[in-house]
Image (cartoon, rainbow, N blue to C red; front, side, top):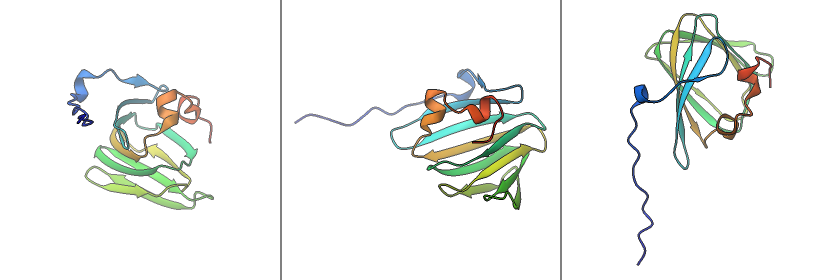
Length: 129
């Protein structure tokens, strides 16, 4: 009988290089088969343009705060501070701005293919998706 069990991954965030997306945003990614977790580092004033994706997203703020605008018209505002979590369902348009220097933990299911293959131009050049 063949053992198809995969090995566990043990990762130290601080040992990983940060990917520079633009002047205000960096990230580190860890991906499993069905989930992705990211540390996203935003300088105060850093903006994530409006976008949506088929992935469910859980955002947990470790340090700082983000102001999210939600919905097609960006008419729902939610401020998420350190120690708080925002669950963003699939396909919900959203944007964010860092109200202060912020460390954000994002979890996605399934993993974000655009983050893995570098086609996430909305983050790199600041254009809405």
